Image (cartoon, rainbow, N blue to C red; front, side, top):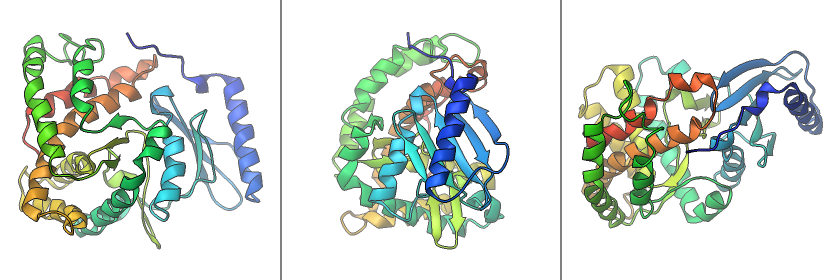
Length: 328
């Protein structure tokens, strides 16, 4: 049974402390709050749009399951400058971050033009290549470890969590599928070993990279909303990205457009690996990442917030996708 706590942001004293912290942080940048904050609350985080005389800034507080995001943001700003928004302030212990406004998202400007993704994905891949040699810093900051060598054990533990899997419940994992997944564990471990043989090093893996989580700025793309991230095989990112593109554009799995986007992303590793091998690795990584997605949802929903019920089916839903064909 997981231990959960009441969301801190429901307490007025917490809100007062957060507003004081924001005020102090803005003061160090010569700015001040000029009006009431505008909240957006999810079971895993609270986000405030904070007005200032120089435009809005954004405060985010994560729940205990995703609290590492603040520290991850600070590390990415140091390890891959120019790829994320530089935080105005972070409090890693409390999981608080204060960010400048990022402008329009990719979703705001895409307008059906998927060629944007042919530029976004190489930029994101470059971030991963830059971060890979220093993943020890991310792990020390509390970013979840989803590296290939630990994924079989993580799957075992997940299969033991009948509450998170909603085992036997209407939106949950059926007993038959649960038994099938248990029987599949040796094959899943073999998939992880095969993927490791390609020698692509682990890096940060966003795990929710879609067009709503990329800012489009005059200086390039900025990647944000890292609350699902882990240290994992980098190619796993393609699972959500390609599924999202396919859903938004009405593309069937295996559509040549999805293959073209996959190849644009993989180009960053072609100086060290054969393209055919990279494509095989990408397919295996997307299969492994179905378990990673289930784990990230379980972390995000480690809260008694009644609203979690709206999202709880994502944990068993993503785990069941381990038997599905990858989108490309």
